[in-house]
Length: 402
Image 1 (cartoon, helix red, strand yellow):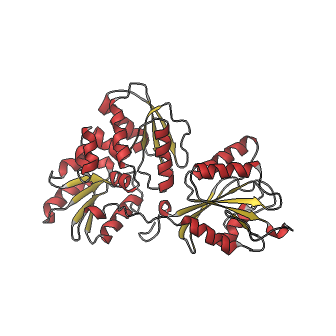
Image 2 (image 1 turned 60 degrees about the vertical axis):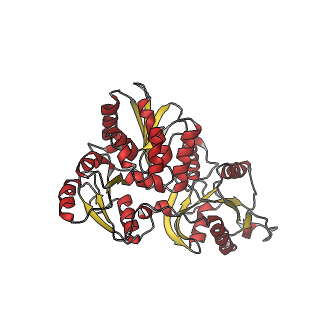
Image 3 (image 1 turned 135 degrees about the vertical axis):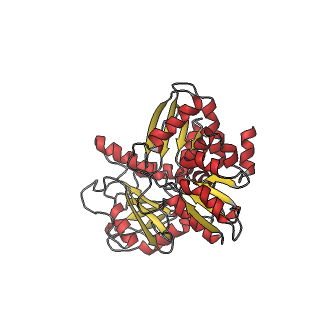
């Protein structure tokens, strides 16, 4: 991903939902002006959610999601419906596509209930108006008559989606509000077998961009280069930001009068869950041997032999607590519905998840009384440097004294 490309997590997520053969895929193609989705008169052509990033005027950068029919049947059908329901957790605007000839059904009403329960703004697109002899183009909100085949009502539908997609612009920055123009910021980026070849990972890219926009200077080094860089720099940096996995070494090499934190901690603040993550990590001290811990990641990647989620974090927890626990893992869009059996959830920084989905996961854990923290907070806690890593955020740091 280039520095100027909008990350998927920052795009407006627009989900198209409805029954099989209501014309969801045809409507997706009509709205986008592209053949993004396969269309067929056969029910159930869309078997998995289809994601497409694009620019959609007048909204801007969006993620279009075409979903399987909510009324799918059979064992495979139930799995497809499950996937469709999972999409709701990341949807910023929902488009319910209804066959105008047959009208609303119980399955459609159930979707409306889910939209309202999850507080998702929605529009009901009454599709196939070209086949409906009594269609009226004066449908009351949230309804609108459209024809994917004829193109009727598509412009009005896009305008409705755009109005629903308007969100208050977040004033939260990743790091820019903590620094001044001309400050030096050192970013520590380990290059090992787990690092992607030829590129920086998304949080590192976004942090560099935020530093540039603050008119400050970013200096990127490997963990092995930090100490000599500090000695040769000639100017004390305002802050050192590190990959969480290198926390222990970086903390030892960074003088106490230089602020130290991690990408994971910065992004927890950016996504609004730093406070809950700090509160959640205290559960480590209360867990009993044999308790279950869920380790969850928002992306999917090839597991390395010394993978952070499956190897390093369990090892660091064992070293810190001296106890053996049961571990379970989830990744990508998969997140368990029943969390009550877990004593703690350890989540990645969520850079690949949009704000709505991260808030959903946090809220879901809170409702079931399960503490949740993130990789960076947990690693800092197990390495004995959590208090120091929170120095840039004194109000959050005070939570450690409670």
